Image: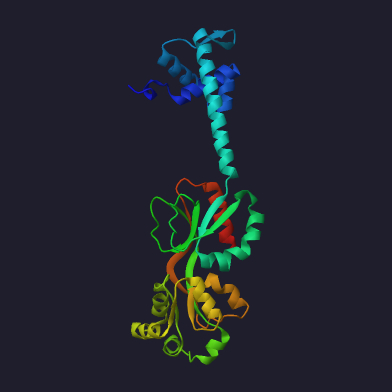
Length: 298
């Protein structure tokens, strides 16, 4: 038989410890937020387990028997150490930084300009951000959560805070649009320089499908266009006037507002969403606060 099998129920030990320390079942019940009867039942369970009385009634109160005093010393020390251990772990977790993995394009173009405000609004978070293009699995040991675009269904073993639907938009500088015949999306693809990215090859297909452009026109435009390894480089190329890029609207909203980029056609929803993916075992309280802040900003 294992040593764990010989232990009485933890709730019974907790009721005993509280009753012995408080001196009455009523006071113990108040401290534990249970009924008087619940504490009495736990005490009977414990006495039945040991086969001996642990308390004796003296007047209107209770006093420990010799066996009760012996048990109190061990149980009191055990609960004290347990409480200290839990407090130490809680303090260490609260003091540790919350590490967020984020794609470089989203980090540079959206999150970094807001970091000062985030840190001011959520000082207890102690956010640490790392850039990650290829390692976006939140199960990594070195992260608490991952900010990423992805389509459902989400993995069953992960908690995901959905922040907003993904919408993609075709953008270019005003000079590029002036020099590109683009009465329709098909015209633009037939005459313009298409900028693509290896990290999001499906984006142009999703956008052109929504615009009613045939696949052959897109394929021809890709043959003439330019491909970049990451979305961040793609957007820098668009800002440099090298052609027409496709990107999540949240990453180009500032440039569109300032007139650096123009989006003649509306954004298209892809079916994916920007979400905060929580690593197993991460602090859900802090993750929830971060998710709420991100959602407000978005």
